[in-house]
Image (tube, rainbow, N blue to C red; front, side, top):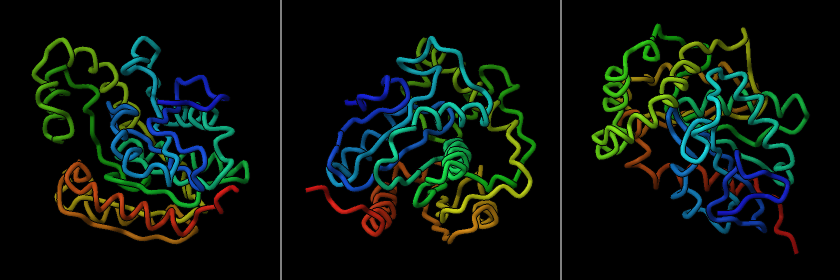
Length: 256
């Protein structure tokens, strides 16, 4: 793993650094997720793409740090951490909670005049589509049951009481962040948005994903793949092709 000399290594992880790549992909984890979820993406796309995976506080090697349980605050911190990483075209990919964080970070970059080339919003309802969910208010067993129902966490981990107790604070904090998030009325990004959703996702219907079109003044497209909330675990090749096709079309020339 490598980090930029300008980065302290807390937020931005590069598992397969590609310093000469013409394009950079920034990956935003789901609730309870960590940067390492995107290690296979970095392995698959390097050296043609420099993949940066974000590590939020409160998990893995940042477990002792205070959680950020507010999407706006988290986006502010990520925006700050990513300063200096825009020396080449950027694409944002966020899954579930990560899609909301990526949307808010893209808005902050665009205020600076240097937004991403595209935002991939995976497995998440449009920012204006709300459900009255209160998972973060459940007891520990209730949160564990919710995570199991999403099929995004290894059952061996969920069966290990010590390990699950370690990740529960991050899960609860992330669910609180997502469930209390309210987008500003009329919030949009200027970059195109690609929404990607599983056809059997209990957390996001196709119609709820399609409403991302209301949150961009750029282009929009929707891809529906077989699967549930973590469709991308089984459809990785399809997701990588979507990313690769976009990145090839929007890459800067290779440096000499």
